[in-house]
Length: 205
Image (cartoon, rainbow, N blue to C red; front, side, top):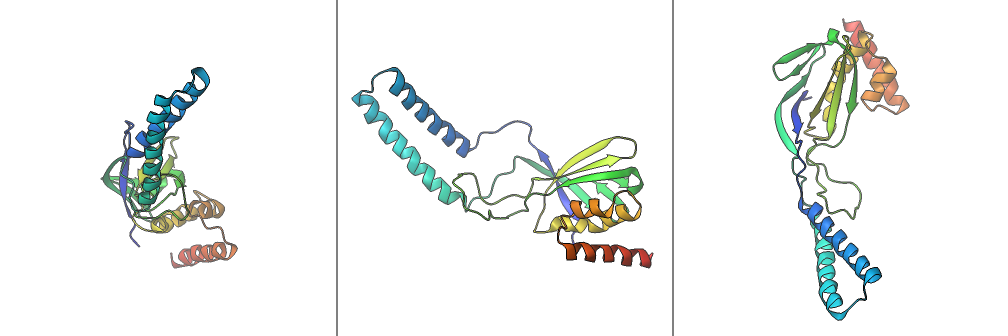
């Protein structure tokens, strides 16, 4: 399995998207209507102006909900560099991190590239993910830590780090329970198979 992941560098500046702008307009119209309702009497001009405007915004909102199921979320940053997991080390671009330097890891698994949302939503945000909401934090033996975001290119891509996690178990860096948590192995039978896999690898050494 492909054990290489594109590194994702999040954008620090906040960029307004079309859905953010539409949300702002809708909230503005609602606030303006409430202020007019409770502060000054509603006149004909106000109703004539805001009713069509609010109606148009609602129509646009419904259309965007439908369209959002066919739109891929844009990258809020850049893909630059490679993260490679091997049984005995990790490559972050040209830097090699030997497993002996690692004490523990935290793995946050989100979506994968081109994954579609599996439930209906009234949100107008894009429903096709770009797979960049994944991150790993390395805790080193010297007390330092390093976090990095990465992209999953396909479903289950994160499982390619299993040989690396097994090496952490075999070198007593983490427990089997910690390894199953990292790899999101929850089913009892799958946990037993994972233990057998570790034992088989140990016998081959």
